Image 1 (spheres, rainbow, N blue to C red):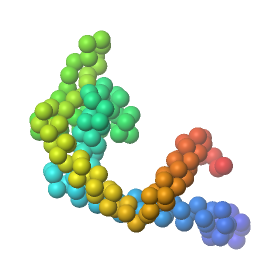
Image 2 (tube, rainbow, N blue to C red):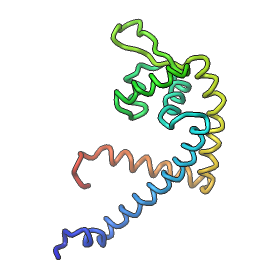
Image 3 (cartoon, rainbow, N blue to C red):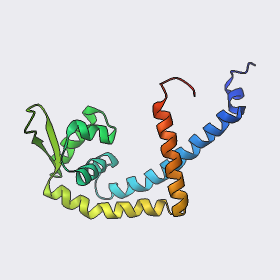
Image 4 (cartoon, one colour):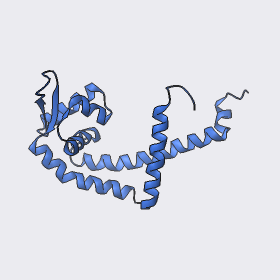
Length: 161
């Protein structure tokens, strides 16, 4: 057996602590995501559809490309989501006055009424899910996770730090 085997890597302290953190982070996210998914499903929405409504509610009409970057969904995925919400009368496409090729996504009155009603409930579901930490621990966890995310994003793909 060489030092490069998965078993050897798992016993390396640095790697083992990183793997443990990854599992804990994934399980925490999964537990919270499950609760939020159930909440939005109770209103006939997928988490991605809710994400579109929430972004448009808080940011106002957005170019579809901007919405895509905000949601971290593919271009085709964003188009699909906006189309589904438009079919249900919750969102609409608007022409861009400065670029005939571009389209804005915007909430309809019905979409705005829906998100105004369910967003406070959704925020309460998240707050309840996070109630296991004190306010100080939540601030500390947020700072640590932001630092971790910035470091991960700054790394080139396939390289170890």
